[in-house]
Image: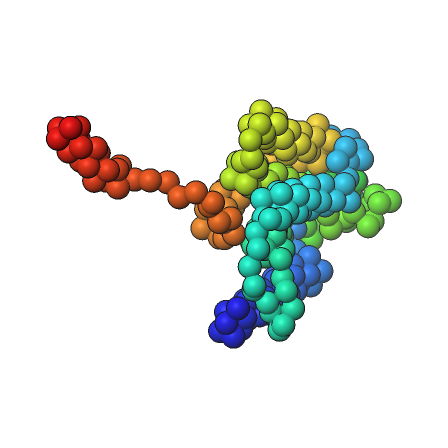
Length: 288
């Protein structure tokens, strides 16, 4: 492997690490440093009167499945496709198998996409500040909504105090739009489905491939629907989050993912290459 090619691989890896590190810092800032906007409410808003429920799909499960399944698929598929590829490519005199380089390509793109979807979601939550459907149950605002003075008017955040006991959830109850569960699940599972369509191509796997793709999409769909049934989000929050996640998965897959293609043992013969052979055969038949 030439020195220039080795330098190119090292440079790309370092740039990826730096950029993903910057994006990760941005995620931390939008989650922990950014002062969130808090929207007020109307006393008669029935969409905010639902009871508080625990998550059907918890955040740890969401992260483990969303990261674990795609990364596991990358590892298995690239090893199966590229395990027999042999070359002399080395980086800093260390031999890097083809399947390892193939594994890194979708992994890096997927990591970028995961950071992007987190940033998009956090920014939307911080800027919009929409109360969740269980707002009244958690907050228990200090205003007397039965009083005529509070009827049919928008109540500003500085006009009330929350009297509820779950004080650790007071900030989160203003982060309904857009649904982070839905956007994350849609991005990770649709990206996995696109990847399987491209890389799970060995003989006899078509039915299995489509089954796995369907299962991945249904996992994301179930996660999105659970956010409505758990009263964590309004249906429009879930729809917006799911659309953003799906759109980003398409964009990252089409324009942001490089694939390490295995060498083809037999090159296809083009029609124009067959023409001279056909002419020779015809000449031999005519002169027999």
